[in-house]
Length: 133
Image 1 (tube, rainbow, N blue to C red):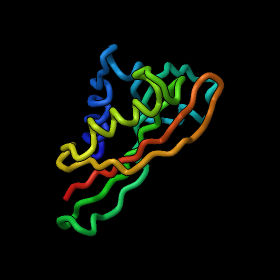
Image 2: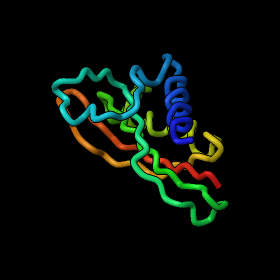
Image 3: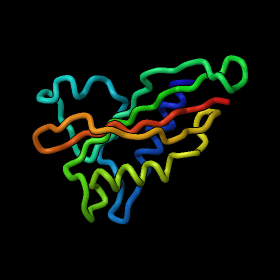
Image 4: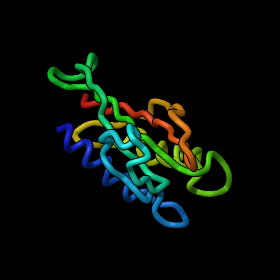
């Protein structure tokens, strides 16, 4: 179930488009790419997906879970008219993913925060909750 959720999210992020083409040049599961950034090639705008935690669903059926979904987004611009500017990317992701069906549940936007500034780009964590109920 969790691997299905991860796979469906990655496919959806790969397919996100703007007027200029695909929104992301790079979409992968998060496997520590930012831990040693000097040894990893990052092609912004990029998205790395992680499922960092899950809890029993207090409002759902028995044996259902609520899973936290973190999408780490890196790009070169914060705002502006470019579709690849961070705030445009966050808006596009929210509009495309919020309240949508994924892996026998629904995904809900749950905020974002700036994580880091690296030479040449910035990274935000965009959070969603996947609810199986």
